[in-house]
Length: 243
Image (cartoon, rainbow, N blue to C red; front, side):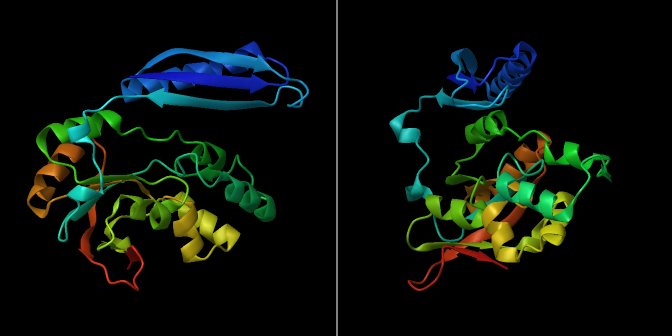
């Protein structure tokens, strides 16, 4: 429905604030919600110079009967991944450390642009595509792959008896994640716990709906791919199996 932003800074730079709020407005448009207001605070005692911090929150409504929760997930469901555009605003503490230890030059050519541009590629917003999908297909679960990666986000949408079996070779991991892993000497488990590794959203649907769901998602250029399925989980097994 709507979004409100909060912009706090040590000293207000009007051009910077305008750019940030314009970006927030563009994101709201992609999500189909209204930016109805916000707050700008100058706090020189908290922030140095023109350093700034940004926060915000969104409000939405849904009929109780239409809430997507763990109760819909069933053994045999298929898992569809929507490809990410990059790091999606997560893992930047590690990214900054990798840049530091590797002495990387952000102006270096990378993936059709520069390394810096690639690392700052805006997060994809999947709202409208998923709304369209929900009109034709029952979505059994959704997992937004943010901080915590595949390992920590998927378990939140699974019932105790379900395990997500994910095939890592089912999608091409963007080159930026290969670069980060190599330059930072990051082990696989840490990569999957910190970054989305190329999958920004996971959609769980019944096996009979998978083909239709893929067609709808790919029609909107979301680059959706089948990445796994729901299998039975034993008590001593983890909720996610990356194979």
